[in-house]
Image 1 (cartoon, rainbow, N blue to C red):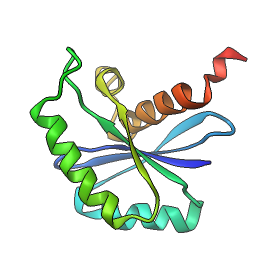
Image 2: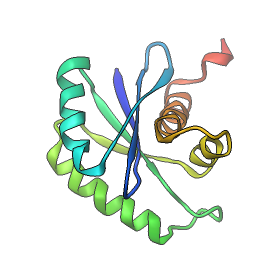
Image 3: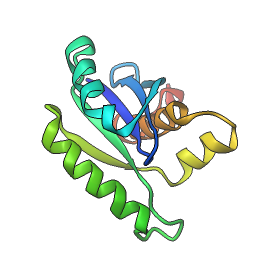
Image 4: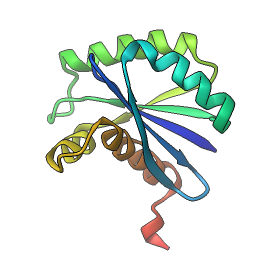
Amino acid sequence: MKLVGIDYGSSKVGLALGESDIKMALPHKVVAPQELFLEIERLVEREGLDLAVMGLPMGMNGLETEQTQTVKKFAAELAEKITIPLVFEDERLSTAQAKRDGHDDAVAAMYILQSYLDRTYGSNSAK
């Protein structure tokens, strides 16, 4: 299965690509939110994507925040426009890690997607 990871922000969106068989995600690019639909559809055609995984920003206490609601609203609109399913992955620690490491939004998307791959398909490091 081929997947795209999405780190949504109001001014820019990080994208990462990954595959379930190799359980690995890599940063792809950063786009403006209004370009996301077309970029995902291009990737569906070019890469044969099967699933979109969007980071869901929860509070450190596990409760929803104002940003959680913003992302859910954007995701609902996006899900109606794209031709692949969209699921959420808790991004509490992944995005913070990418920012702390000084990396961009595509790396944050990679952390989100890698977290999903590890949780869903098992970690590569377990082999």
